[in-house]
Image (cartoon, rainbow, N blue to C red; front, side):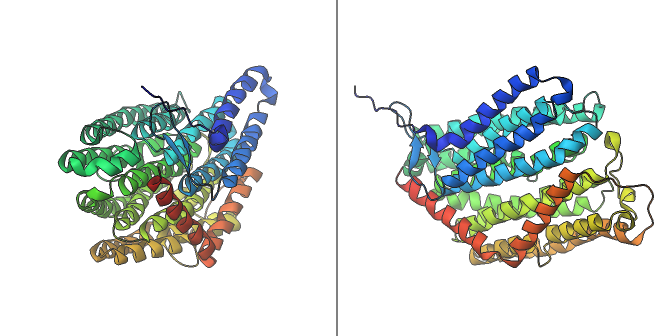
Length: 490
């Protein structure tokens, strides 16, 4: 029997290795440093993320690099698609660390393990975007999830934080079982878990393959908080530390959609007649329930939780349209990129307004924000406009590109649902702006430099994406083309 030699260039996965090794180093540093010096762990974390980002950008336009085990097929694909996803995740982590530094001190949970748990989760998210095998998808999913379970309960002994971690853990394990069962069914239909092999053989057992695709969709729908698999989201977002909520609201969503796009569109396109209607219905329900339930929320974190659910529906529209439109994947990728800055910017303002022990999270706490901190109220209004989809913001461009993709794919009914639910969302987004400008308020809002930097970055990029979207849309189109070529030759 002849064995194929392993094909593994460590330089191709250097960004992931750097994040993992950096996290391990920080664990040792955390043990060595005296208490008064541990603030350096946060800054070292930022350095590690920045180095990984530079390495990631250096892999742009590299196609065809893979890790192949002995006698197997490539487990990891290094292409522009994975590079683009990893850039989004690293930018998410960078901004999340910036808004965490002073929040952890304010909440009395400033412990070094926070940062290396975040880095371990980031490594799993990055592998989700590069996975070329269903087994790798599962391993990456668990690597990103387990640290998040711990981070959700990081504010112990606060009961709501511990409850948040337990709910997230139980429902996360439940969703993973669906994913594993779906992988088993795909293996039964094709004899392999490698995505290129699945692509070639899925037509042999379409019924079994369709059932497997449905279970995989359920498992990943939990991670991206799509209806009806969203039940964990409001309670977890409310109970977890706000900086953790901000990180998982973007990072986990990006990773989940990264895997979903690669599996459905690059391994199971022959089953699109099965999963496109499922995705379209889920997207419609997600937008409707997410936006309408958000109307009743007075807790800002719960409101943003339902907002996050609704935006998962918009992104899923792009994925559903991609089966019949070349615009679909690039629209979904651009939406994820714009959502990163808009949502983290909004959460940064929530952290600035929030007082100790989770106080300062109701709409009443935003009364008179414009008189207390005018620039903060203006930034909040800008982010709310972007989440609504009003120009000139990145949120408007993102929704416009998704609408164009859906119409191009002959899913006009879905575009109508999206437009109507966007109108509904304007009410609860603008309500917080109304409270900020039209009421008198009490108390001071102290904004630390790191929060100021994070908000400034988010405002500038969101504005640039609204005024000059074409270069960024071109990047998403290059990512799609690169992935198709790489997997076709895999």
